[in-house]
Amino acid sequence: MIHLTNKSGASVMLTERGAGIVSIVVPDRNGVMGDVVLGYRDEESYLADGPCAGKIPGRFANRIDGGRFTLDGKEYQLVKNNPGYQLHGGPDGFSNRLWKASRISDTEVVLTLDSPDGDQGYPGNMHVEATYTWSDDNSLTLSIKATTDAPTIINLTNHTYWNLDGEDSGSILDHVLKLNASRWLATSEALIPTGELAPVEGTPMDFRTAKPIGRDIKADFPALKYGKGYDNCWVLDGAPGLKIAAELSSAVSGRRLEIWTDQPAAQVYTGNWLDGSPLSKSGRPYRDYDGVAIECQGFPDAPHHPDFPSCVLRPGETYSRTIIFKLNA
Image 1 (cartoon, rainbow, N blue to C red):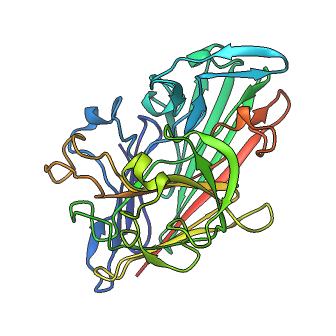
Image 2: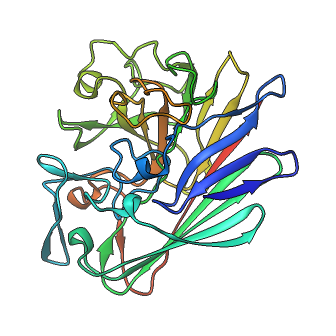
């Protein structure tokens, strides 16, 4: 495990398994420290865990329909890990690999991974670097860079589950969420994008004004029934470049989280299937809706939608994306 600690004593713990975030310990409104991300009691539980807790999935986060894609006229068959599609890069994707850590300072670490040509069906030898930087104002910056020696596709994010009352505090349905998004990606029942960028106005998908996550989660709305809650991708508003994606807060602890990114979209997953996960750091079973993941990323299934932002990476290019988690109380 890798520990980053700032001048106030707030800390981050990372693991080389999946370049993942294991814990973030920050004060509440009364100055009481608490761990605000979900994780497991035993380190070995991070291997091949269903929730992908805290880790970087890849080469392609989210879903690719049919587990195949065509690039430059050649079709590539990927290793599928779900009926009808590949999720998070396949059964042995980046989230299950041991990355190599190099500490820069007490508050910064670089984790690297080399993915060979043909890995889970993807072309090209890919080199990936994930740099985590923990600041004195309790902001955690994740900078991800990647290069390849052959044309390929890529979509990387971080899959941390947040509970601002503490990882052992139960449901996040009373957490208040605001999203900088006026459109979302409509999907099939398998949560594969149809290609429609649907307006959120007048639907349960509208988080432009902050509201409790649970307010509309049981609404009679197809997308919410497909996934037993929110498991959807929102298109972020604003020009390309760094911008705020989401704001999450809890009235119980007083903690607030802002997420900034230069990614074009954010997948929000309300932990709808956390039942049966490995035991928590506190030693109890997690339940559905005990955490919420806000995954800043490219559009899911982008290889099948020419109108979506390109996910193609070619030799000589550098994939570069940033996600910033700003915590305060």
